[in-house]
Length: 427
Ligand SMILES: *Cc1c(COP(=O)(O)O)cnc(C)c1O
Image 1: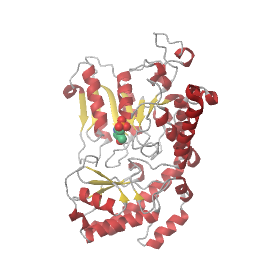
Image 2 (image 1 turned 180 degrees about the vertical axis):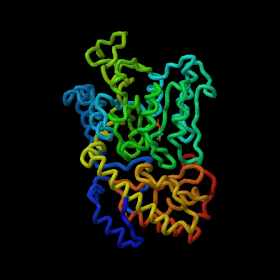
Image 3 (image 1 turned 180 degrees about the horizontal axis):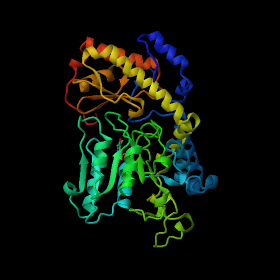
Image 4 (image 1 turned 90 degrees about the vertical axis):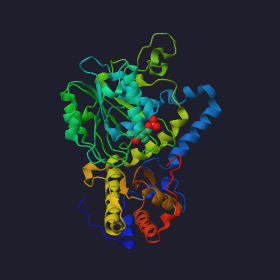
């Protein structure tokens, strides 16, 4: 981005005037007096999400069990409906997507499908910066095969504790590696891994590769048709705004549709025979086969509403605003906060950074508490990171300006010293 920014408030307001997405803010529940910078952890509720949930409630009230049949079986096929709305976000076929389970459960599902270790090829390649649940799932899948994670899980280490090198990951793709699981965007530093380069290298070596898109989907543009990875998983409560604990998603490359899902259940059975209730599983002919049990409709409905907003705006416009507003935030941090020991921990290049800014400070924890008391909702990640996510749909440039002003105040007034450094249960 070549934009030259300015430091003043008037300039922030000008940017808001020029913002193509400024009307989108009206679709969201923004609390008066609060600046929400945590849409990377839990997206705010949109009016569309609320409406879809209330609509489902009405259908249940009126129809009871018939909910599965109304509107041409919309809710029986709800995963397909949501998959169709999700497909443009990752440029995959709708049939390659199932909307089901949780991210962690879907990692288990995908690894149990693709991980068939032999004596020569038995390792799973991971990194040491991924979110811990991914690693817990990998380790337990290895144990289920009677192997020891300390031998069968190969960890690529970050050199700086923040970012990963594609070259180092590729160098670790030795012939004993059977499967790779990596995050597309790192949850702390917001680094985007070079998905294309890494996936191509894995395919060349005959290694299955899957991507965790939790911090990528709804934040950056991706093209799975071009990428040809084997599988992917994601949650829908972060950038997508599906609501707390909302349903997750998974992608299975169509060339693998003939595989038997690792964890089978009756909602993965093909429609034609599902209700014959036979004891022989007949998988659906696409990613729907990777569903397990009855879909949790109430954790899906808000996602339907939320995805309609994505359909209306489209990823290119979302990413464009996100890149500009995060660049503006980094600019203000550089200009106004460096003197107080704040630093930017994410990569700066457009193609290498996701949707949040990683603000580092030795006192990050206490500063995050002071921010909350001043009406800013950030999130803190051990040991020294405050993640600030200006969301394309609803964060204004003026809010970003104000957040930086507050970060300065906290330091000038030394407000953070009033807080204890002892961590709470949910930080
Ligand atoms: C948020 C996140 C998860 C969350 O997993 P759940 O099963 O939804 O709790 C997993 N992996 C990564 C990389 C995440 O960012």
